[in-house]
Length: 180
Image (cartoon, rainbow, N blue to C red; front, side, top):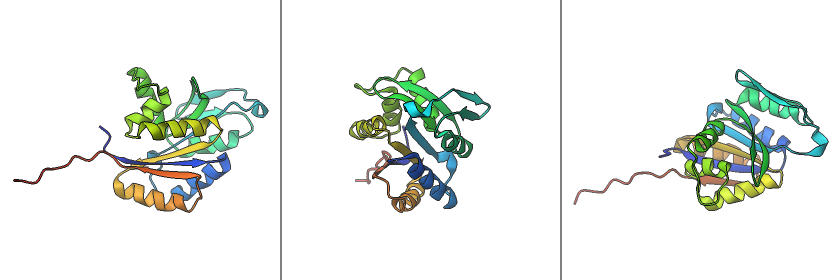
């Protein structure tokens, strides 16, 4: 069970998402706890290819410099085609969670593999559907996870970056019954 809190911010463009990542980085947020997801299918980008050598994936296209910078900052990178959403570029620990959902064939009531990965992190199904819809309209998701204190810090930083939405998802905490 996920014991970390998460926040998910939606940004309208890669430049807005990049600015948010830079703000988190400058504030000292642990980049190993940050993921970004964006759709990649624009005809004007003329993508030639993707590859992963070691921990560095290369991408050629209109916003290739953005993805190159992101993949240099965050840990883990992948390209997935998610039916119903399309081609997605993902960087950060969400890559591992998504692969885990795919490998275990987790199916969560009509959610995509991405949705199942997010749901597995403790993000409610209605929020997952909102995030998938945002991706379908070419927006970027920035996801941070960590302790309650880390997420409060990240939320304060991201509030200043004007995301379209910023949702805090609290981890399920075990309640300890008081002695009777």
